[in-house]
Length: 273
Image (cartoon, rainbow, N blue to C red; front, side, top):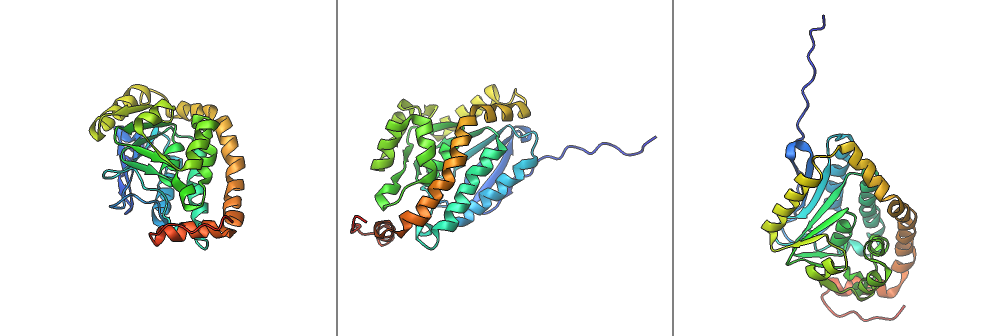
């Protein structure tokens, strides 16, 4: 007769990687990822590396049913680091950033974004990648890259899939931010809640009612099925837009001028080329 006993199921461990915090809730069925740089939760190379490390760890988390993204403090995220948009840094920055989207695609684990305060640029792109977006009433969402003379590759693909080409085109071309109620009106967010406390409570209640009773395996098949077109579009066009950005956009004077003007806190002097 064997004297060995079955190994106890290990409980996932919370982690603090510095700019990214990981907390496991609901008995390890929900992974709560918090962006936290102590300021505007800017997605710089360190935060992207830490996010990638956390996401890679989910590959063997068979019981994980939901990934929830949120920002520490008042804001979700001001976006990707503008300094890392400069010509020499842009290729590595885009490669790392886009790697997060492809990893989320391959994991096919349901995802939620809890948005409060500013959710701009790369921060909104990360939220857009999620299956369901919830917002607090103070949320401001926008893709302001065109104001800097550049464009957002993931949002250029994902935003039209979420809200339609006409509305997405207007937001991408103007770079304007919208409030939570407009985001709800155009179908970008699922629900708006009065404040951060109400947002946290609502997302938890939604999770308990709609996610936890279901099979983790079946949820992943449901994500793959619901996103079959979305994933095809993302996979085929994201590399094209990354190449367009790096090889053509960053060769223009105005793209470099827009980034420089922002960093130098002055109006841009466009050459229109």
